[in-house]
Amino acid sequence: MDNKTTTPIAVPTEPTRRSLLKASALSVAGVSTFFGPWAHNRVWSQAASPKPLVIGLTMDASGQYAASGGEERLGAMMAIKEFNDKGGLMGRRIEAVHMDTETTPATGSRVAERMITRNEVAFLIGGLHSGVANAISQVAQKYGCIYMNTNSSSPTEAGKDCHRVKFVWDGNGTNFAHAIVKNAIKAKGKNWVLLTNDYVWGLNTSKTTRAIVEANGGKIIDELLVPQNTRDFSSYLLKLQQLKPDVVATAIGGDDIKALRQQVVQLKLDKSTAWVNNQQDWPDVYGLGPEAIFGVFGTTWYYRLDLPGVKEFVAAYQKQFPGMAIRVPGNVYHNSYMSTRELLRCAEEAGTTNNLAIIKKLEGRKMSARDRLQQHDAWIDPATHQCQQSIYMASYNDTPAERDDIFRILAAADPKDVLDKDAAGACKLETYEATPSYQQ
View 1: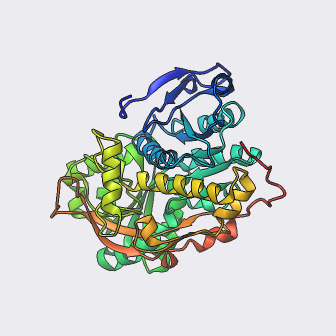
View 2: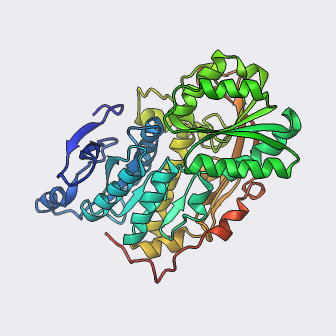
């Protein structure tokens, strides 16, 4: 199957949105995919080998974050392939089932319910839109199914919306703001405007940015709220021309940031105002062209980091997924791969797929910088379940070493220096006793 496409498969109907009836079959890297208990039972009545372990991939294939959803799937599939090449997990081959979460919380909730109750998945992996991730995690907690939130960045995901079964693998808006804002005030000026996607990630990221700006002597002169799926930013950009801020701090993601960047360049506002984008996901900027990659932004990984193992990681991506439109992996792929690999490692160490045993392996887990292909050692905060990792500040690279070398890494912040200290107070993890035991 061509890795760049998905094949729709009909699943049994139920009272859902029509688009939920489209499920994407992944047959990447020799990983088979089945849908529903009937499909599984039919296979195992004919096979003598142990029943495979099924993982549910809850990733967008449509909506605002469709491009990143595709990279998330590839990252998880690479980690699964590596385990299968070594014999699977505890003698069981690992399979994956994917359903489009559509960048919509209601769909995310239905997908999670279906995967747990009908597909009998052992784990859930994937998440870009923080509202979708929160919806998935509520269903996962109800059943006790471990959920790896790979790429959602709202501070609330490891704060007030945390759960015992959920682990948050991306840096959040607070981490990125700590890494960028103070230096930007010194270098660019104190008068800031916030340009904010009007949903949980954007709102909470801008709230944090506001607090850090004001704590460092800056002033928020206005905040402009942008609905999701906005493609015409002319009214917002006209307002910015009138306000004339020193800095515009954006919390805009997915296809929205692509449109915004192109329109800012058309009006040459990138020349008159400094721009800070809290986090820039690789699929959202790849292929836009150098003129649209302006300002300073955060990321958690870059494919040209001069670190042991990075070149080999990139080569493995290109070998496994040849001919991809995105020719080199970025932060979204990296987060998905690392979270899937660490989950499977913990299950292997625990010697069981029981959720409570694996959760105890994940909580407080330490991961070396070399193993994670980053500058600093990482760990999973046992109080919030967020992966604390290196945070990079970047800009456009005007002296690229090759075609895809579009980022210049300006600094690498130690995770200890950019901690979200409010999350631990806001997060109230369910007790082990209140978390259902779950095992497939």
